[in-house]
Amino acid sequence: MLFQRCILLCGCLMASGWLQAQPVSQPQRPNILWVTSEDNGPQLGCYGDAFADTPNIDALAAKGMRYRHCWSNAPVCAPARTTIISGLFPTSLGGQHMRSQVKLPAVAKLYPEYFRELGYYCSNNSKEDYNLYQPEKLWDDSSRKAHWRNREPGQPFFAVFNFTISHESKLRTRPHKAIHSTDQVTVPPYHPDTPEVRQDWAQYYDRVTEMDREVGVILEQLKEDGLEDDTIVFYYGDHGSGMPRGKRWLYQSGLHVPLVVHVPERFQSLVDGQYTPGSVSERLVSFVDLMPTVLSLAGVRPEPHLHGKAFLGKFATEDPQYIYGFRDRMDERYDMSRAIRDDRYMYIRNFYPQRPQGSFLAYMFKTPTTTVWKSMFDQGQLNEAQSFFWKPKPSEELYDLQQDPYQVNNLAESAEHVDTLTRLRNATRQWMLSVKDLGLIPEGEMLERAQDAAPYNLGHNPDKFACAELYEMADLATRPSSGDLEQLLAARVDGNSTKRFWVANGLLIRAMRDLDREAAVKAARGMTTDPSPYVRCAANEVMARFGNEADRAAAIQLLLQLADTRESNVFVGMTAMNSLDWCRLTRAELGNRLDGIPNKDHSISSRYDSYIPNLIKRLESSAQ
Image (tube, rainbow, N blue to C red; front, side):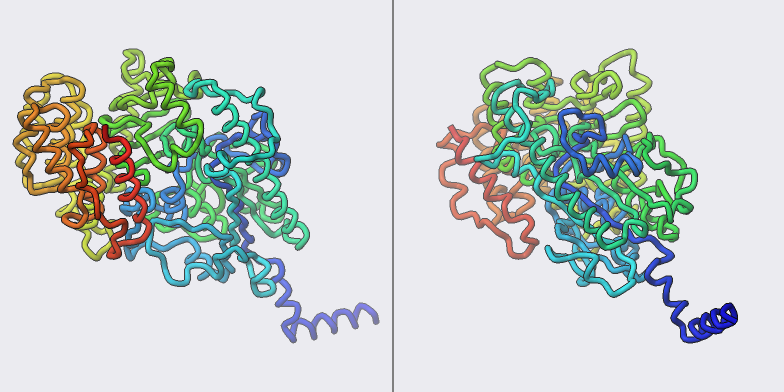
């Protein structure tokens, strides 16, 4: 009789819909929690760093899976976050420059859009910093109050919590209560061993410990809410440490980040054969893979235009052979480098070898390590490994990550490694061509050519962007060899201004390296009035630095004219000021030519506002 009553009760409940509603509290799709931290690499206990004190992340790794080889793709926040939110390499979007702003193509959607369409409550607490114009309502909530607790009852969630306590700016905050001893710091071989360097490194570890505590608070809230069994948790850092030669640079110190993923038992079927609790994965993964991976975990096939590959879930792919990194304009400093690594070697292709790694950057020089390091270089007190950062870059770098974990022994000239160098060089070229790398065009020219459309569309229009041709010209210009000047000069009157831009840069590099310097200077003299302002900047830098006295006087005046954004624009002005900074201006040459240049251009995004003022301050303070 009791059994019959139970059956009857269940039937009534099913008819009323009550039992059918119960799975809402235990969703078929997992909740997803991303816990991220700023400016810290894998200096964590779970990554084998005995100096680190990170019990909460270590505990997550003990029950989850730790990825040994994860790259951030870009070694600085805005391009890295642009990669994550879009699932595309920003070099394809035109959003690879630090703090830039470009339009998205129609084909692209940002990952919160996908998940909100699936019924997820998407919250972000709270940093965004994307180099993209984003949809008006991207998140359900993106603020310091954003939390999964604000969703509708039973609604699945995708929640992001970002911690800033480990940010670069926190390394130099004084006074500071120490946690780690400066005596026990391991100073990497590329840094000088000084009290200032030890203090910054110790304080970095202190901030990572503080960050770990904040991670612990969020994980405890998940537990308090009874959601641990329903939630897949990711922890990762957004790029390498804020120490100089970490953040902003294409070395392991800038690209290598921690990634820990915990999949609760309930969802183990989603990752069958891909995941073992408490284990370490040797798969090469990077930020561009995050969107495809969470879509795969939610049972959604990633769209084919995405550049990344899912490493977990229903649509996980085979392990890739390579992962990739990029570096372009960093705040006010133009640069362009690309990186690739396999399971052992790392290759870096520098397309601006005329510039050192350590170009003056206003924000970076606030860190005590930076100033003491540069001062010691100027005084000739550094060894070769420590001096490398302050000298013009080689065109290519190759490192054995097993034998050289700090990347201080460049094997690019090693006869023993020619095959590896060639293989990785070719793989880098193939990647750049496949994503239609818009770094091959000067930033301002890219935006002008794109007009009101997304730069992505420009890159995918072969009539307007001949990627392979531009790559070959950039490669010839920036990887010079004796006797190749005639081949380079064949394009100095080409109808494509970008090709001429690379010719002019190639002349500067050859003049610096004393490869056919006289002929290079003569050729540059003929390009100083080129129709393209970006070509004129490079050609006039050649004349100001390597021409005769009359050449220099004329070139300085032309560069100062280009630097005036009232007559050009912010992008031309930045390019000209970057050139002027290497011309060692005298006070008489500079005069008052920079007076009155506006700090802001209200016709473009405010993300560019600090660059012109920073460069003006630099030029005025360094004039002799």
